[in-house]
Length: 200
Image (cartoon, rainbow, N blue to C red; front, top):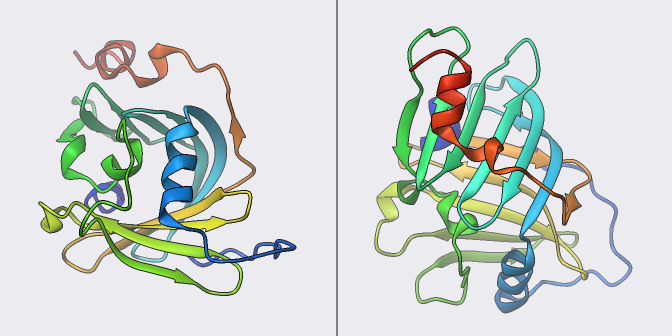
């Protein structure tokens, strides 16, 4: 299940219709993501097998994110230093590690997000309430893609869906996002997390 989160990707959440809903431009979305430095939010994850997990996500752009899963899951997925680590609470060994650049999350955690880049966006739609953007690394489409769901104006990220090259999906629906929060470096330090869990 945790591997699906990374290498793969929600039920579309019901969201209030903004007063002047319209399709958001790729440049406006890129600017929003580049301005999003730190954030935290409760999340609900719908896995490819239909199971549901909840927890809290911490985002510190560029390159850092932490998904703390609530009991009974108690798993942890974190990215820092160019690596994504998956901690399985049932395992007494170290985490499974993957290069962040090989996951679709790298597209929104990049230092400079530019969705107008050639071949970066393969779909850009508006469903009457939300703008949905499907993005992938044009140089490595085999890494999968990510569907980003925004409302606005003003632009707000509501959810994302990670799609793997085998057709699997993992969806993350965000709750009320708090931005501009102070997040300590410890939250994204994989080495320190390993040591704290006695796995080194």
